[in-house]
Amino acid sequence: MNAELLLMFTLGCDRAHLYAHPERKLTTEEQTRYDEALTQRARGIPAQYITGHQEFWGMDFIVTPAVLIPRPETEHVIETVLRLGSSNGGRASSPGGPQIVDVGTGSGCIALALAKEIPQAEIHATDISADALEIARANAARHQLESRIRFYQTDLLQGLAANAFDFVVSNPPYVGESEEDQVQLEVRKFEPRSAVFAGATGLETIERLVPQALTALKPRGWLIIEISGTIADRVKRILNGWQLVQITDDLQGIPRVASAQRS
Image 1 (tube, rainbow, N blue to C red):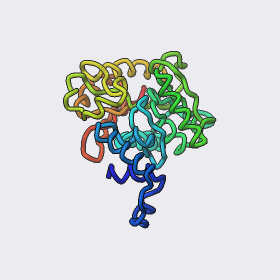
Image 2 (image 1 turned 90 degrees about the vertical axis):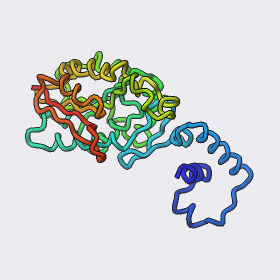
Image 3 (image 1 turned 135 degrees about the vertical axis):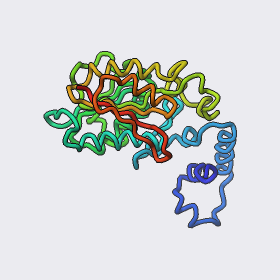
Image 4 (image 1 turned 45 degrees about the horizontal axis):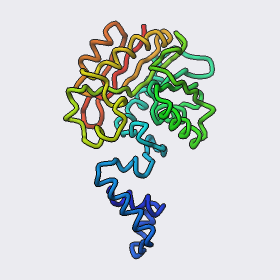
């Protein structure tokens, strides 16, 4: 699959074209570029960083080593927002649509997917990394959603208004340094460490985010964060005092999303 993906990237074609023209011979230049791509992949560089693209929620995203590669499991965050937003007891209503902030936006995949799915929403997105925000803005422009999203370079929710949001959503770093050996080598070696590892326990960023979210949310607003099975029980304890705390599993049955409502 990697070889096929890199060949499509080299030739600038889709899978259907590749299989419809099996007789096609590569030019010397194409063969050189393909060999270079294969060499990079053999070194462990993720295919998404070689091609510069990754699909998420049916949308194509630019990715570079400045941002975490969007993953299918994170789509459960989008599903949770849509489910809670449509439920009767969901959230405090905002004139003109829900106010949503994506914390640690990275490539912008969560913010842009929500902007696509909820046209009336006002979307905000934060990241501490200027390089990540540059990629997120480029993705917003590619999908013609730049007018829908306000970007902020800040640490988590610092500097944003209190009692302002219906949803605080995030895929924060949640891997503990003690789990480092269990993380894929290419993730450890090539993806931004600050987007993967939170600290010794994996809870450090979430422990800072939860009280900030409590301040930023409107009454009955929702906090929705991606987590792992390793920290699920401890995240529930951190959310003690919140209402309607729920852990949602991914398709493999692994705890993946924590949601909780401000009282």
